[in-house]
Length: 100
Image (cartoon, rainbow, N blue to C red; front, side, top):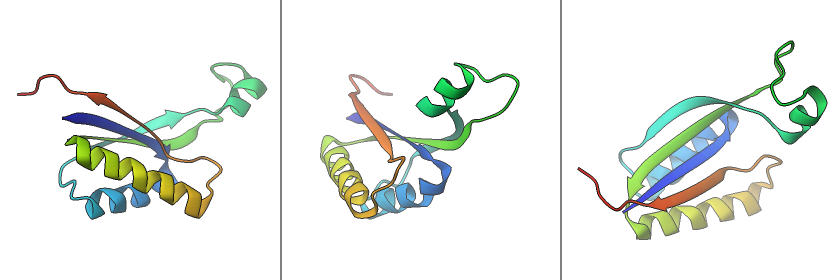
């Protein structure tokens, strides 16, 4: 089993949902997160307390088979090539040794 985590600007959320649906991921979790970019950090410092310059982001994660994880990562790469987003979906996976 693999745990995959996809982080993205909120505007890409539907594309992530579509990829999950196309690859048979029927259960996943999602949460809103506050993202910051390098340009924000350079402009305002690490935590811009006096002005909010954050980005509305989302993080989706799912426990799936290695085969599905590989297919989803390939779909993400193809999606990025096709749409050339300035802020692409960021994703990673980790092995799950044990699960109940």
